[in-house]
Image 1: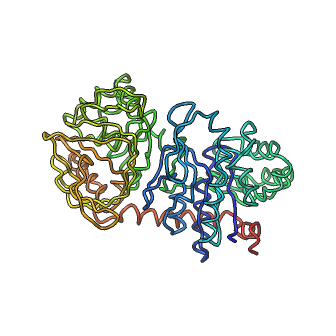
Image 2: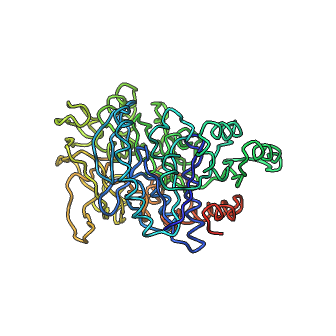
Length: 503
């Protein structure tokens, strides 16, 4: 049987995902077969596996850190919020249906066999499994029938390390309060405490660490510094969404209320001098070098919001001279209309931004597929991206028909079986406006660098030669190694191995 370690946190965004990814990388470097696992994930950032199944991106990042292909058994349950009180429930990569929170709370224990089957499958492939919890185990209103924190730790008989976030204040209260609120049996599972995101001289923290260890009767096994690595973060509290720092080149992403897959734009963030700014303010658009309409879990509602907030008018005005790029739901918004005859998003029909001659109809079945594609036929300002290869995925409910007035720029699709075919409606461009259904379009090859070169040339500035820079996947590999180095330097790995019975 595989050894197991579980990473839980005192709150959302305490750094569980990053710590788990770092451990995956360290174990891999130490020669072990390692795999990540999270029984239930709630996120609008998702990924499509080679089998066409949907899973959360946190476990994709952790699988990359572990050097293995992402599999849906790493995240058997994915909840994608559709509104404030309900979510789309995805089990083993397939849509089970939409459920209000209260209904799902009663239903979720029926999914325990799916959770355990997925975990057992991973056990066949791995020496070590790094399990991530969700939220906090001290959410005592959710303790009954828990399947993701201490309830899961009990099912797996997993030792737990508890991560607190000092950057947000009150880390000692976070850790001690969590320990006080769990049961005696659960407290016995917590084998180590981690203080995350520390800035400054660690010796100043030592008296607090000593007192924490004494009161908790649990050792502190790591004080991790606030590390700036460019690794995808699926959490809605990500600092990326609130940063307003300007760069030489500024790419403005519209911060939709139901924004999904914002990690699509991480490739731009690695380039020195480029800033990706998320905004819901029309005035931020005027001085942008490119505006991006991202994916959305509810295109129709977010399109209404875009109209009511004044952003629609600002984007349409900007598009006369500036570059606008839409991805997935954002691509649908660029068209003439979005029709919902089957009530996928509540029904009805809504006018789009009318920047691309295109009609979109939402279908009952979700399209989920990985693709490789060649950019060919792009005209207008971004013609320089022609010839680039794209390795990404589609995940959407809509089907779009592009009118004859506009061109397409994804001409050839290379499917998983190696056959080439044309997929209609996957992309379109009109003047300075571009859109596609492909998530991850900016990640591979030189496409992001070529776009940045165009933006710099239009602005009359120089960022150096970008085309020869490593593609985003190579860049991420370097970031995982940096993360592993930080874990080794600041966490007692000998203690971690002992927790798992490996020393």
